[in-house]
Length: 284
Ligand code: AMP
Image 1 (cartoon, rainbow, N blue to C red):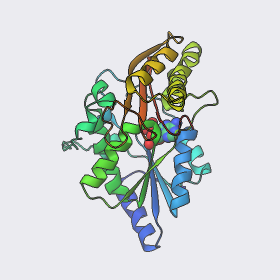
Image 2: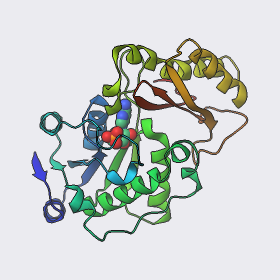
Image 3: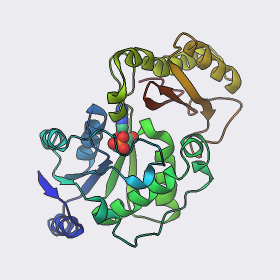
């Protein structure tokens, strides 16, 4: 695995792939890798000749008072995991490389960024889309892979790529979970042991919604109520939103179908966790 640090490094590597006629897959991450990230690598590898991964804790997507400074980092471990999984090029830029002094242009997301995570974290998606735009222009991948875990991010990236006519295929890979159902996340490392027991409430609530839907319930309000009922036995889970939406723009709906998204966000101890399911698929 080659490590790329500068813009010139990335461009040279990309030129080499093009000259050799190799297709390139790309997995952007913030590091502290877990199996969820590594499955994205598998998905990229299955579709392309060489895979690049980026590790960059993007300051632009963190609001004031959020966890930018304490976000978990372990580059030596990430390097070993990425190399073992077959990443060909690891791009680890410095913050000044991505945002040199004077850099001020930002991507403005559409209305899909205003609810859910965008409402809870003002400016978050402008930061996400700006860094994704820069990374896509640097790496110029044929395929970029994101996780369903961050469903609103996938919707917005798809919209950006479509609205701005970028020649990249956006692939979304399923959420990878711990054996008890908790969606893997770098932020799970914030959970104290009792928080960790409570955190399973999020996926438990999604499972309850899925079961209610399979039992014939399609009313979105009643499905949301099923999630809240399931969460009643997890006092450590401070729900921020539970919502049923259509999958293309995440607009709220009144009647759910197999493609509908059910998303939840909650505070558990020091962590703010998110999870979601596609109703027809459940927890997978
Ligand atoms: P992050 O490092 O948290 O910014 O995540 C980088 C990428 O990995 C994003 O596309 C995430 O959606 C994806 N990802 C994070 N956790 C999971 C998971 N448990 N399963 C699948 N993909 C994930």
